[in-house]
Image (cartoon, rainbow, N blue to C red):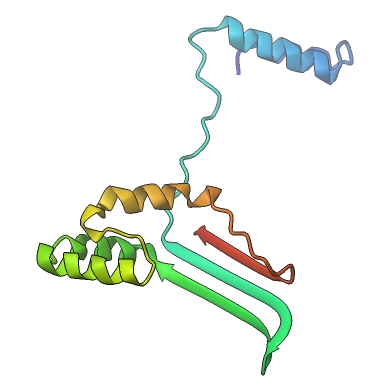
Length: 143
Protein backbone atom coordinates (compact mmCIF):
# COMPACT_ATOMS: atom_id res chain seq x y z
CA UNK A 1 0.00 0.00 0.00
CA UNK A 2 1.43 3.38 -0.94
CA UNK A 3 1.90 6.24 1.50
CA UNK A 4 -0.89 8.44 0.12
CA UNK A 5 -3.45 5.67 0.44
CA UNK A 6 -2.26 5.00 4.00
CA UNK A 7 -2.70 8.68 4.86
CA UNK A 8 -6.27 8.66 3.48
CA UNK A 9 -7.13 5.59 5.53
CA UNK A 10 -5.54 7.16 8.62
CA UNK A 11 -7.67 10.31 8.18
CA UNK A 12 -10.73 8.08 7.82
CA UNK A 13 -9.83 6.17 11.01
CA UNK A 14 -9.35 9.45 12.90
CA UNK A 15 -12.74 10.70 11.71
CA UNK A 16 -11.28 13.62 9.79
CA UNK A 17 -13.01 12.51 6.58
CA UNK A 18 -16.05 10.36 5.78
CA UNK A 19 -15.95 7.00 4.01
CA UNK A 20 -17.38 8.61 0.86
CA UNK A 21 -14.65 11.25 0.89
CA UNK A 22 -11.99 8.57 1.40
CA UNK A 23 -13.35 6.60 -1.53
CA UNK A 24 -13.33 9.66 -3.79
CA UNK A 25 -9.75 10.45 -2.76
CA UNK A 26 -8.57 6.91 -3.46
CA UNK A 27 -10.28 6.91 -6.86
CA UNK A 28 -8.63 10.25 -7.66
CA UNK A 29 -5.26 8.80 -6.64
CA UNK A 30 -5.71 5.82 -8.91
CA UNK A 31 -6.60 8.07 -11.85
CA UNK A 32 -3.56 10.25 -11.22
CA UNK A 33 -1.19 7.25 -11.28
CA UNK A 34 -0.92 5.98 -14.87
CA UNK A 35 1.48 3.23 -13.75
CA UNK A 36 -1.02 1.86 -11.26
CA UNK A 37 -2.12 -1.68 -11.98
CA UNK A 38 -5.64 -1.82 -13.42
CA UNK A 39 -8.47 -2.86 -11.20
CA UNK A 40 -9.00 -6.58 -11.00
CA UNK A 41 -10.42 -7.63 -14.34
CA UNK A 42 -13.37 -9.98 -14.29
CA UNK A 43 -12.49 -13.61 -14.74
CA UNK A 44 -13.29 -15.05 -18.10
CA UNK A 45 -16.43 -17.09 -18.10
CA UNK A 46 -15.66 -20.80 -17.81
CA UNK A 47 -16.32 -22.81 -20.94
CA UNK A 48 -19.70 -24.53 -20.57
CA UNK A 49 -19.75 -28.32 -20.59
CA UNK A 50 -23.46 -29.14 -20.86
CA UNK A 51 -26.57 -28.01 -22.69
CA UNK A 52 -29.47 -28.25 -20.28
CA UNK A 53 -33.19 -28.23 -21.07
CA UNK A 54 -35.59 -28.13 -18.13
CA UNK A 55 -39.38 -28.24 -18.50
CA UNK A 56 -41.72 -27.90 -15.51
CA UNK A 57 -45.44 -28.11 -16.10
CA UNK A 58 -47.80 -27.64 -13.17
CA UNK A 59 -50.87 -29.00 -14.93
CA UNK A 60 -51.92 -32.61 -14.30
CA UNK A 61 -52.25 -33.63 -17.95
CA UNK A 62 -50.19 -36.79 -17.45
CA UNK A 63 -51.38 -39.84 -15.59
CA UNK A 64 -48.66 -39.53 -12.95
CA UNK A 65 -49.15 -35.83 -12.16
CA UNK A 66 -47.20 -32.77 -13.30
CA UNK A 67 -44.63 -33.08 -16.09
CA UNK A 68 -41.00 -32.54 -15.23
CA UNK A 69 -38.24 -32.98 -17.82
CA UNK A 70 -34.56 -32.42 -17.17
CA UNK A 71 -32.19 -33.11 -20.09
CA UNK A 72 -28.43 -32.61 -19.74
CA UNK A 73 -26.47 -33.06 -22.99
CA UNK A 74 -22.66 -32.93 -23.02
CA UNK A 75 -21.61 -30.17 -25.41
CA UNK A 76 -18.73 -32.39 -26.53
CA UNK A 77 -21.37 -34.68 -28.02
CA UNK A 78 -22.75 -31.78 -30.07
CA UNK A 79 -19.28 -30.73 -31.15
CA UNK A 80 -18.41 -34.29 -32.14
CA UNK A 81 -21.67 -34.60 -34.08
CA UNK A 82 -20.84 -31.52 -36.13
CA UNK A 83 -17.37 -32.85 -36.88
CA UNK A 84 -18.84 -36.23 -37.87
CA UNK A 85 -21.32 -34.53 -40.20
CA UNK A 86 -18.38 -33.28 -42.22
CA UNK A 87 -17.46 -36.92 -42.94
CA UNK A 88 -20.85 -37.79 -44.42
CA UNK A 89 -20.76 -37.96 -48.24
CA UNK A 90 -22.46 -35.03 -50.00
CA UNK A 91 -25.02 -37.31 -51.69
CA UNK A 92 -26.16 -38.63 -48.29
CA UNK A 93 -26.35 -35.09 -46.88
CA UNK A 94 -28.54 -34.04 -49.80
CA UNK A 95 -30.95 -36.89 -49.01
CA UNK A 96 -30.97 -36.05 -45.30
CA UNK A 97 -31.58 -32.35 -46.07
CA UNK A 98 -34.49 -33.31 -48.35
CA UNK A 99 -36.06 -35.43 -45.59
CA UNK A 100 -35.54 -32.69 -43.00
CA UNK A 101 -37.15 -30.14 -45.32
CA UNK A 102 -40.07 -32.48 -45.97
CA UNK A 103 -40.53 -32.86 -42.20
CA UNK A 104 -40.58 -29.09 -41.73
CA UNK A 105 -37.04 -28.74 -40.33
CA UNK A 106 -35.28 -26.04 -42.39
CA UNK A 107 -31.67 -27.05 -41.65
CA UNK A 108 -29.00 -27.48 -44.31
CA UNK A 109 -26.43 -29.91 -42.92
CA UNK A 110 -23.97 -29.04 -45.68
CA UNK A 111 -23.72 -25.55 -44.16
CA UNK A 112 -23.16 -26.81 -40.58
CA UNK A 113 -19.66 -25.89 -39.37
CA UNK A 114 -17.96 -26.26 -35.94
CA UNK A 115 -17.88 -22.47 -35.47
CA UNK A 116 -21.69 -22.41 -35.80
CA UNK A 117 -22.00 -24.68 -32.74
CA UNK A 118 -19.54 -22.49 -30.82
CA UNK A 119 -21.55 -19.37 -31.75
CA UNK A 120 -24.75 -21.09 -30.65
CA UNK A 121 -23.21 -22.09 -27.33
CA UNK A 122 -21.84 -18.60 -26.80
CA UNK A 123 -25.26 -17.01 -27.34
CA UNK A 124 -27.35 -19.45 -25.32
CA UNK A 125 -27.22 -17.06 -22.34
CA UNK A 126 -29.48 -14.76 -24.35
CA UNK A 127 -31.97 -17.50 -25.26
CA UNK A 128 -35.58 -17.02 -24.23
CA UNK A 129 -38.25 -19.65 -24.77
CA UNK A 130 -41.88 -18.57 -24.79
CA UNK A 131 -44.50 -21.16 -23.87
CA UNK A 132 -48.23 -20.66 -24.48
CA UNK A 133 -49.15 -22.47 -21.26
CA UNK A 134 -48.80 -20.15 -18.23
CA UNK A 135 -48.31 -23.16 -15.93
CA UNK A 136 -45.29 -24.42 -17.89
CA UNK A 137 -41.73 -23.18 -17.50
CA UNK A 138 -39.01 -24.05 -20.04
CA UNK A 139 -35.34 -23.26 -19.49
CA UNK A 140 -32.54 -23.81 -22.02
CA UNK A 141 -29.02 -22.93 -20.88
CA UNK A 142 -25.41 -24.03 -20.78
CA UNK A 143 -23.61 -24.96 -17.59
